[in-house]
Length: 120
Image 1 (cartoon, rainbow, N blue to C red):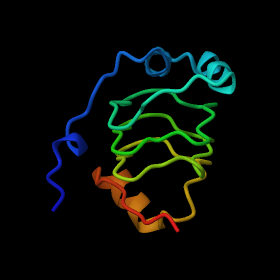
Image 2: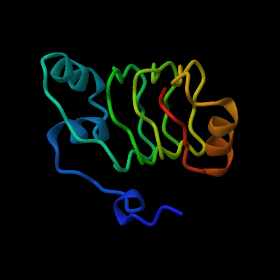
Image 3: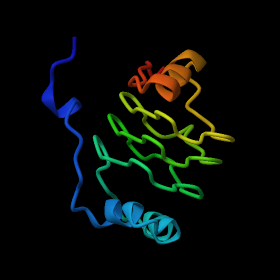
Image 4: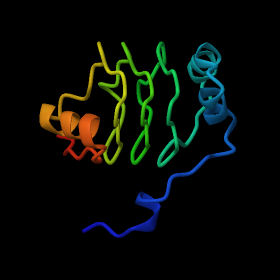
């Protein structure tokens, strides 16, 4: 059992890029990301956000909590999702990492379990 407290406690970061996501400024986030701005999103609280249109390529969402967020159409195939939870999210059209099997996604979507997978 993983008892590392950093993998359990959600955080609301003061990082400017994270705050853009919380405020729904997806286009501005994407522009700053494309310009080279970085952010640490690991373990962040992303509940209830509309993240449609997000450029998630290379983002680390490890241990994030997306409960009831709108992820429709987001390409998460190159994002890190180990330990993330997508309970009750809208996921139509989402492209998940190939290493993440359907049962992990379904359990997280329906029951809020944290998704686990091994990167090959």
